[in-house]
Image (cartoon, rainbow, N blue to C red):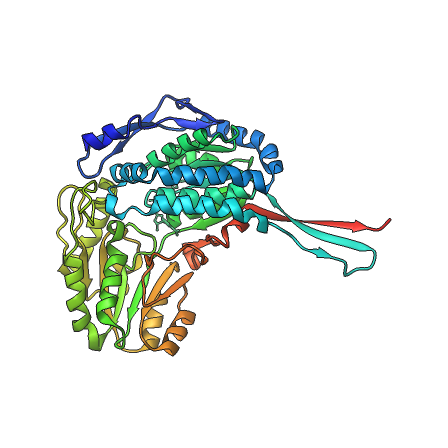
Length: 483
Ligand code: NAD
């Protein structure tokens, strides 16, 4: 670890406001801790209310010139940023391991981020409206315009992917931004701020602050000068973001929230493949994934066969030091998450049967864990656990499993494993989720050109290469009457 930290020096820990790095106005800092060893990696400046206000003021001042620069020249900046991010992927991967315990072997966010900046560098040309001459003597047109200052608030589990998924379209559309990273994973956002400086962005166009939900996040969410906010995080905080908008200036709100995703396995499915996919879907990033398939429903006549493959797949995962390239499974991010997952395992011990894993290890590690025989009403079946813990339940009929899959307030993602095309289509339509994957779980390695987002309490709005620009544009109509 010491060698890795040395190779990354100097680790940036300051706030990036108006094109300059600076310490927090309160002088407060918070620690970033490597979850594998519990050593302090860095002490990061914590943004206070004044820092958030300064960042918003800088973004507001920079907005007119950035908006008026035009798509082409804004694209030049984004293209350079994409190249700079791509060159930095190894450093970004190590910094993320040190912050959240993600194995370096499982780091994909850097490439995803570089791809987002590259795509939106070229894509903002599609920002166009309509024209109408339907009424004699009237020429009418609609324009798409940026909001102004966009607030971007991201979680800790995929920091660079979330940063880029919001910032690239927001900037391409002509907004200026204030991004608040998660207090648990601020280091890659600050590294990225150094790239923004290196590329030579005009001061104030990109501002990056580190800090907690209170006061930094809430100040941004309630800010009267922030006209749009894009938030990814838990459903509880998402409700607070909507409330903050409602009680301040009704800023445009886009939220990507939590999940409790079902994976449904029918008796005609390729069970070995289904086991591999669902293992990865719950184990990747130690289960700290919004679309993790935390509920598996397998048809009762093939349960034994499926479990044979699934247990073997889950048991084969190699846990260890996230910086070791052979490690597949790191610790939970911190004591809080570890404790939370442990509590759910304790409930499962009482209410169901643990058939693999359980028994949390020391050092924030949770082994891939399988629970069976739970009541559908158990908290384990209803709440987002955010750990490598999966409940496997059985069903007999299609109607029954649709009802069970939909019996949740979440609606982010679902998987259906079957070789019957008609059934795949029926289920895809019947399940209340923003995305339904057939014969796959979420982590399929496909490009982000679909729409991603939640039904029900999993969020409002959509992200994706073809969708995200809309989150940062408002529509104006101009009516011209002939004189
Ligand atoms: P979180 O809601 O605790 O925090 C997310 C961000 O919000 C952090 O930056 C935090 O500091 C900030 N925040 C907290 N309180 C705030 C407030 N009152 N006002 C403004 N900002 C505030 O979530 P987390 O623990 O960082 O992330 C895990 C959650 O994110 C899970 O529920 C997961 O499912 C969800 N998530 C969803 C997606 C998606 O695309 N749907 C992707 C990744 C993670």
